[in-house]
Image 1 (cartoon, rainbow, N blue to C red):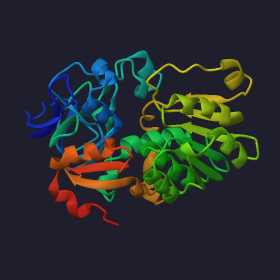
Image 2: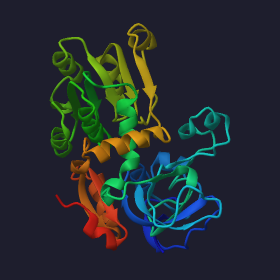
Image 3: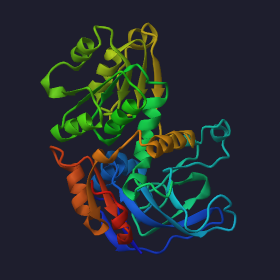
Image 4: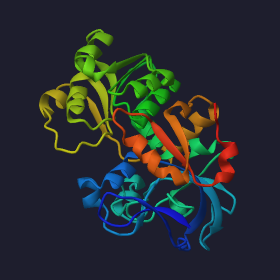
Length: 356
């Protein structure tokens, strides 16, 4: 089968002829339909310090965002069958450790990440343990089904507490930040503010339902948020960028008693005024890692199936699998020329993909 592979520790990805994946008794074999490129994949492509310290096995088929159909099931699989239209959570827990037994498998002590700790989905076939699988509504468009992993990040970060009637501020205009705009709008936020750097994605934020978008190069972010909230500060702050300055600005901009969701990953340690920015402000700070398995997926399915959430505007490009290098270059371009890029692995699905 064809697979996009990191062969060794250097800045190159190759599409190679790879062996078909093996199948354990608790796994299913999936014919991959559509995949989407994630920021993690860009780290692996660039082979930066994070990738150098994280990936240890070569060759490694990368990728963790996908949808497809089951073509074979292991002998111990009970909840899925051949022909099911599925997606997988990229987190593969052991279900055995103390954390898993506390009902937090997304934080498993022995967690494997698809495409990093085991071969991923940027291939014609992938094997996935039953415990990480999600069955899609058959009517869900394949390109939408393929982006549910990052969309789930946004659902978890945005809705960890209710947003109805609240002012929600999102720092960061990447795909997860853009998804969060649509989720907050669908769930009844009173006002949605998004900050970012890129004209393309700031326009997409408006389409997704943002009331105010703000280019961080145009002025003081904290001052803008104060003006938009009558000097109180934002009720809910979603930090999606990982930028050290934005992280600090978010702690200043969230109101007393407000909620701060920390999702963006910084490349450096961040000094925090713990007393004044957290304790005396009485804020609730949530670290967001992955998705709640499978509460987040159930909520996401409800939003998608009801029509309340349409993430399509964030998908700016749909390319053939063989054009993966073009997709990576588009995702890495400065200034941005793409938000979310998906790759069609199985050409038979092209007629099912929305073009509106």
